[in-house]
Length: 312
Image 1 (spheres, rainbow, N blue to C red):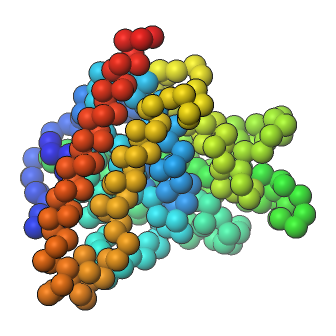
Image 2 (cartoon, rainbow, N blue to C red; image 1 turned 60 degrees about the vertical axis):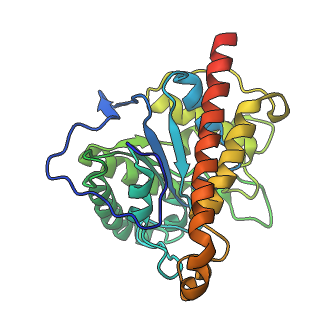
C-alpha cells in the first residue's frame, strides 16, 4: 500500500471484497505486520504525542524489522462527535483514509467528561457510532483495527486547580463507557485512568502540566501502559534521555514535517477560498516536497531502529 499522505487530486478506492486486515486482533491483543500504518486521532492528549513520542519509540523497539509507520492526526479539542475543521479541509475519516491506516488509535473522553454524569448517555451513543463507523471503513481493501484509549486520571495539584479526586471519579465513569463500547464492538481498549491514578498517588513528581495534560514523564507512563495492555512486545526496559537518543529526535522531526503537511498554517490558501487562483500555483508542488520529506523521515527512523536493535 502507498504510505503517501496525498491530499491533492486523490480519491479513495472502494473495493467490494475486503481482505483480512494486515493488523489483526488475536485474543484481545494487537498484532502488527510489516509496514503497518498506525494512525493516532483524538484530543489534546493525542496531539501532544507529537512532541512526546514515547509510544512510537516503544512500538519500533518491539518491532525493529517491521518498518512501522505512525501518523498523528490529533487535534486539540476534538471529541468523538465534534471535530471542527477549516473550509474544505476534509473530515477525520478523509484524513485517516489518506494515511492508509491499518490501526486507528482514538484518544477521547477527557473533553467529553466535562459534561459530567449527565453527559454519559450522550457520550456512549456518540462513541458507539464513532467506533462502528471507523471499524467499517474500507482502506486499501481492508478494515482497520480500532483501539480506544481512555484519558488519564486528574492529578490533584492543589489550589487553585480543581479537586483531582472528584474529577477522576467522573473520568472513571467515562473510562468504563469506553471499555464497554470497545469490548461490545470488537475493538481494543487501553485504560489510562487506573495506572495514572496509581502513579499520581505514589510518585513524588508530577505527571501532568495542569492536572489533565501529561508532561514527558506522564507520556512515558502512558506509552508503557499502551504497549503492555495491547500485548505488544516491549523493545526497551528503559528510555534514555532525549539528548542521548537519536530515535525520539528523528520521530519528532518527522512529526513536525507531517504536521506541516496535513495541517498547514494558512489553509485558506491550501484548501479554502483563496486556493484559486493563488494557492493552486505553488502549494501542490510544496505539498509533494513535504510528502517526500516525510517519507525520508520515516526511512531515517527505520534505519535508526534497525541500528539500535543490532547494538542491543
